[in-house]
Length: 82
Picture 1: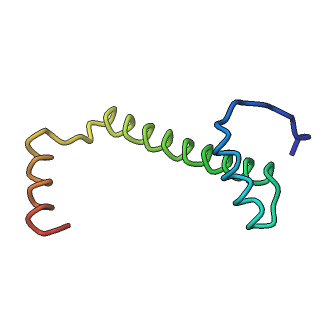
Picture 2: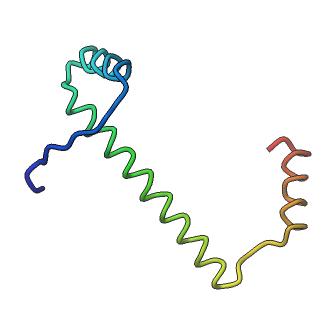
């Protein structure tokens, strides 16, 4: 891992208070929590981008559903409680 860089951004004061409260409760510092939050966000965005790409690949390969097929599936899910 490369050496950490310092960045800055604006955040509402009440969020800083809340963040510091969580950091204190977990016996961690603010930087640790912010790094965890950024990693979580990046992981979720990578997962989302992979799902989008998977959908695009399905479209390229013709693996799609018509509007009527989707309506039928939704009706089935509602009927069976799924």
